[in-house]
Amino acid sequence: MMIDDTIAAISTALGLAGISIIRISGKNAFQTVEKILQNHKNLSALKTHTIHYDKIINHKKIVDNVLISIFKEPHSYTGENVVEISCHGGSYVTQNILKLILQNGARLAQPGEFTKKAFLNGKLDLTEAEAVIDIISAKTKHSHESAINQLEGKLSKKINEILKKIKDVRIQFELNIDFFEEDIQKKEESIILENLYQIKSELDDLIDKGEKGIFLQQGFTVAIVGEPNAGKSSIFNKLVENERSIVTEIPGTTTDYIEEDIALDGYLIKIFDTAGLTKGKTLVESIGIERSYDIIDKANLLLWVHDISEQSRTTSKGRLNKNIRDEIKVKNKDLIEIYNKIDLVSVDKRKEYEGKLTTNALTGEGIDKVKQNIVKKIGISELDLSAGLISNTRQLAIVNISRNSINKAISSYKNKLGYEFTAFDLQQASESLEEVVGKITNEDMLNTIFNRFCIGK
Image 1 (cartoon, one colour):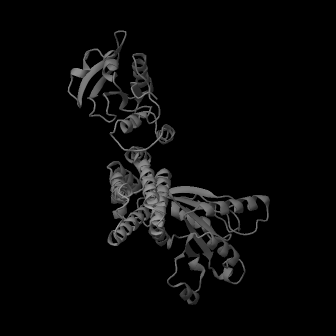
Image 2 (tube, rainbow, N blue to C red):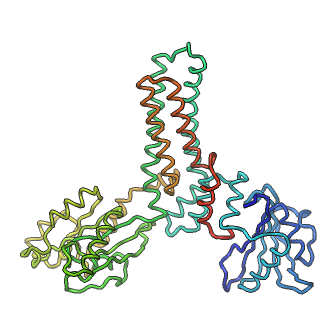
Image 3 (spheres, helix red, strand yellow):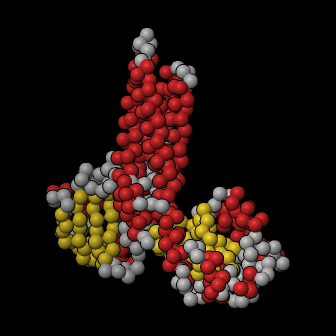
C-alpha cells in the first residue's frame, strides 16, 4: 500500500438497488473524477461537504446521471480529499463508472484501505478503526451498541487514562534514578505502591469485562449436554424456535452436533445440540460423542439436561452420570441444570424439584426461564456497555501483557531490586498498552486488522 495513492472502490453491495456509491480518496481524487464529468471541471473550487448533480461521460457518451459529494482534506473520513459518486444501482453501471475512474488515475482500493488511511492520518485510533468493522458485522442490539461506544472513543479514553497513571508513577522512579542520592521516602513508598495496585486493579477490570465483551461480537457459546433421550433436541428446538433437530423416542437420535445462532435480550447466542454422553455403540455414535466433548471444551456455558420422568427414575438411564459430571467439573465450566419432562412426574414427586429449573420441552413450559438464566450468565451490564469494552482477542492479549508488566513492577519494587527495574517494567506496561490504540504498531499487524474489512470501507 502506498499512502499517497488515489484509491477507489464500490462501497455498496452489488446488485439491483436504488443507488450505488463509489468512493474515491487521495491527493488527486478531484482531478481523477473531473476527467469523467460533463460539467464540473474544477471540483477543488467547490465548498467541502456539498453535493452536486452531474453526468458521467465516456467519449462524450452519457453513462449515468449522478450526484457528486465533495469532502476536502482534512475534513473527511480518510483525512484526504474524498469524492463519493452516487449513481443508479445495478452491477453494469456501477462497474462501468469504477472502470472509468481506474482508467483515469486511481487504483482499486484494498480491503479496509479507506479506514486504514483514516487511522494513518490520525482521524481514528486503532480501537475506533476496529469498531468500524464491528459495526458492519454487528448482529444484535448489544454488539452494535458496544461497537458504537468504541467508535465514539470510550475504550480509547479508558486506555489513555490508565496510560497517564502509569506515566506519572514511572516519572517518579526515573527522577530518583537521575538523582540517586535522593531516596523515596517511606510515606511516598506507600503511595506509589497504592498507585501501582490501583493500575493493576483497573487492568484486571478491563480484562474481566473484556472477556465478556468479546461475546458481544463473536457470540456466547451454549452447549446442550446430557445423556441420550433426555430431551436435549426438544429444548434446542424450543430455544431456536425452529424444528432444527430431529426428535424421536429412540435414544441416540442426535449422532452429531447441530449449531444455530439466536438473539436473546440483545445478545448473540450460539447454541449447540450435542450427541448424548454415553458409550457409543457404533462408530458414528462414538465420533458424535467425541465431537460433543470438543464442543464442551469450547463452550462458555453448559445446559445439562436431566430426564426426570417416572420411567427414567426406575432405570439407570436418565440418572446423573457422576463420572461424566466430575469430568465436566474439572473443566471449570459454568453450568445450568435443567430437569426436563416435568409433565411425566407425579404430583407427589414434583416437590423434589421445587426451586429447580424444570421444563416440559414438548410444550415449551420453562423455556423462558432457561433463556433468562442464559442471559444472566453473560453478566454484562448497561453500565459496562456504555463505558467501553474490549471487543477482540488482539486487544485482550495486549492488555494481559501490560498487566503482567505491572505485576513485575510491583514485585521488583516490593523486593527492592532497584528503581531501574521497576521503571523498565512500567515502560514495558506502557508500550504494550499503547499498542491497543495503535500508538506503537507494525505493518504486518495493521494488514491483519484491516484485511478483515470489505473493499470500499
